[in-house]
Length: 252
Image (tube, rainbow, N blue to C red; front, top):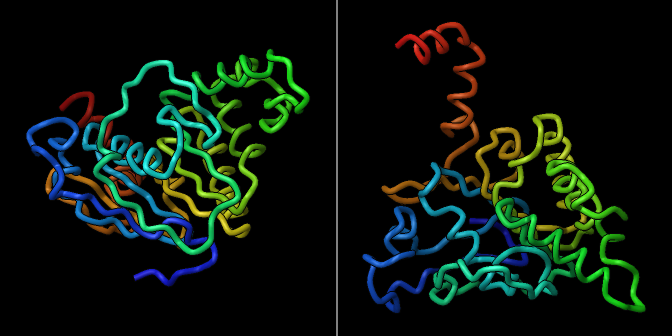
């Protein structure tokens, strides 16, 4: 059990299973979703990991939308919609919030980040007495940077601390070096009373020492340490036995 703290903005999530019409319908028929009852969030960093298609992004989306974020990502002030593809799972989710409310927040999802960048450019072209939105993202249009640079600009400039940050596969366009820099940035923001919920495949990003790792599978959800994750084990085996692994992969 986690001790509540000032930065414990989101304490846990409960799936209202008794209200679900059928577990044979999407999204309730997704592997991990069928086994969710309750998730308790670490006051600093919580990771959701597992294979593609198991339901991590759907679960992350439901948490973010239930909190009040735009399904396509961004802050709670973003209201744009390019295509309504999000599921109804958030309607069956109950969030338990902490006493303190965050001053900042962001829902980052790699797959729709292009849409956020486009919306920022569109809003900045409108007449306004306020500074351009891009100033909060480093002062440069996100479309004028590489995919990885624009991702990193958001993490470095837009995230200000005392916030709840929900990140869905933030490593998608980041090099290993940038992933390590992001891990350092996460620590800086945790020290500023921030809380993170992160879905990732990166053993680098999931290495934060004071955190909770949940492994999602078709058999359920279980807690793991970094060293118990498939991501860590497979990467370590490959690097320590490269020639043997390559021989098996290419000639097996």
